[in-house]
Length: 263
Image (cartoon, rainbow, N blue to C red; front, side):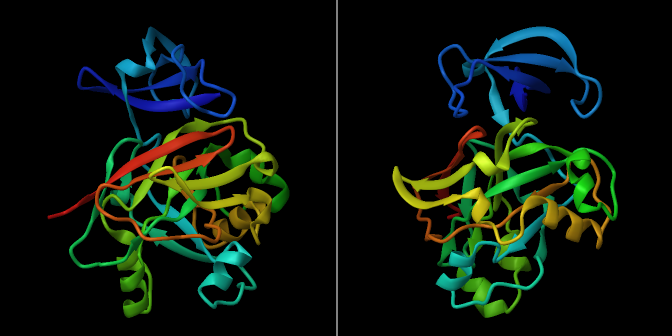
């Protein structure tokens, strides 16, 4: 099931997306069936059936925190001359950085090297702590696409990642949460202005999703709506003003954002 968060007539709501292609691409017959209340509870239709062209898709969740994972693809670690970590390398991105599909990534004046990082995002569905690997599926609500936008020059100069990854608009998510998805079947890709920049099989992750949630939940309590970014493959590259960047995962859909300069 594909669950989206959307705006229509200045009202924000949730809905179930019907009629998208199997790959997740939106077609002419794609509609949103509105939901009453929050979808993490019981799904109650509100009777509205809206053409997706008539709504504005928003980030599917506003998490209390975004927990990201560094160097989780061996080729990406290698392209920066880094070793693959022996355990998941986790860091936080602020929820204030979250934007949805169609919103703009804003280049900050402090950086001259902002780069895309296409990632699979996991959305947590229930309060949890110390989740063992064999029970991880019980705490996952679903999956979506993400872009861990990074000011690479600031990451190098600061010696830590908070500022480089924490700017407003540096965490695009979307287009919706897919509640039924086999990670083993997914292909992650990033295109900039139509040109392929990144592509990898999701099984190439050094630490798979169960290992990541087991490790992260051993450190911090996860609450419904929290997002885990699972790392990016090789091929990260610079974004320039007026670029269009699209993160795609087969079965999850396409997350497209324009790049603008703060000016």
